[in-house]
Image 1 (spheres, rainbow over the protein chains, first blue to last red):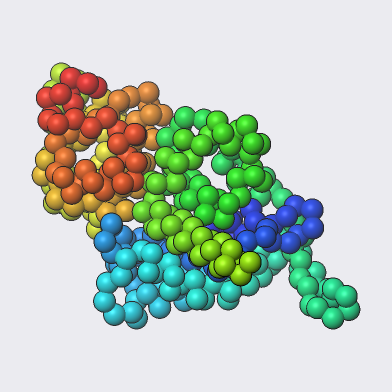
Image 2 (image 1 turned 30 degrees about the vertical axis):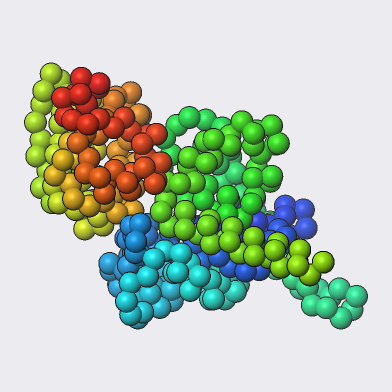
Length: 216
Length: 110
């Protein structure tokens, strides 16, 4: 099974050219941080409530993509809420993203292509060579948000991640998004860490928007 | 965490006490799934003795609700303490579960 970081990165990759969607790096880092935290929750390593997120089991999961974050959380002193932890883990998100992409390459899902733009600037793309996982996740999410079934907890996490990353345009038509708006609003509330992550990412994007308005 | 279980008019009423968090979530989930899988698909969770619920507890409730839905059954929650109700409402679980003020009205509703 893929981790949430791998799943959301697959959804963020353009099917055609293998580039990640256009999302400010700080917002993408918040999404990746949320993905790792929600994976640790699914592994019963952390638990949270409306006030605090805490480590409840320091035993490594055996997944290197998660265990570095688990060690950082375990070493930290004092309680913090989920939003503070999303912001903290987001500092390591560049590294987490590169490791997750490398793992998708080693799984045979992506291919890494290095290149140069204007012979100077280094570029990197990750064309999808095996799209079964991506198609399966997209189909599952479409069925969930356009239907009425009670979700399972993993699908709730994916909804939170897609919402925070603003990826619904890649999964649903405009009409479908209108139709599913209430349902998505409900589903994205159902994971408390997911809620915190969505808010952190929204705050980042609002501050970027304000900053660019002021620059004009 | 203790789970008291009783039946009333074909409805199984389960009363967890204490904290529903990561330390008790598996026990609660396994117990409730076991009840559903034995064919008891009309359930009331009497939460009058539940003092606390965490994210892990919410996931447990979601898994149980999904199982009840799959079995074409009904489930309701009763007698929530204000702090537990707040967490459920923040998580939007009041749209998944019928929430009743007391056990009697929950039993009548399922």
